[in-house]
Image (cartoon, rainbow, N blue to C red):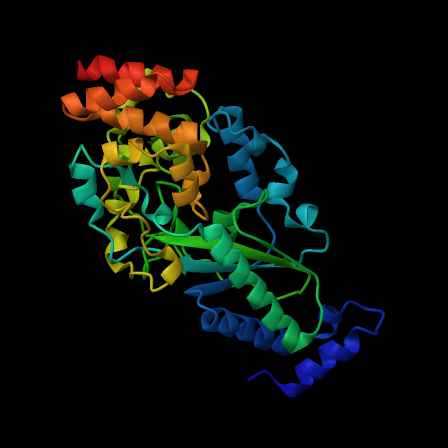
Length: 373
């Protein structure tokens, strides 16, 4: 339990001239940090850490990545770059960042590899099989803030879940939640990489955790497995070749030369995580919201391609699958059908959809037909 004097001191300090965190001793800061972590665990986060706001090395890495154009058409990555690596620029008076982890591996879903191995089925990244994680984590973070407020009184904060210019993996690394692997995802040696991240930027001066060491060693499994060679070097990802980018963030035509390698991956790609040896330690999530919806873990390409726009709107409500839009959904599935074994039923479905397709979707359907006929 936190020393009762800590609670009283913080409440009283709101009426003082100095910021309340400046009134705390080092011991009291440590007690508060531990209490915040305990709140997080009680609310369903699997890990909670605290990071300082220094991100100079990451700022340089971001600058080089942008100069090389590896962000593709994600123009928002070029905006507010100063805010990305300087938390106090994004949220004034930020002194510490509370970083949280929430596991999402869907243990009850059909095995990922069996879905990938069946070219007539549609592979959807494991994180998108259930409810949109943004909604789930945002509510949970607010509850964490509310718990802190109950304990210490009002304080300055702002919570984020992949919704602002935040270098979340770098902050999570600095908060000792794991290390950034060669595939550029965060890895925890006890939990793998199947998890979401969230942050609370706060004006509380909290003791920062000590980052853990890296444990990728000489392993290059993620680099070797990447279908489109998007991991161009250890710790360097070219989004323009990444299937997750191409099927979710990219709004235009998927490069013809990359389509065959996409296979049946219609929303995202998990190959680099599926092959990572550290994921043998990943635990299945017990979060109901992350349970698979609409049999998306075993759905066929033709079944999903047949969804009308109304049906798509209904079945993807509250889901990350809405990100590319209905046209993006059809575009991606058309590529998958073009990569599937030749089948008259596939040809009929493609031809039927072609008549009413948008120019973007029609281009990919025509390509798929050329592969099927």
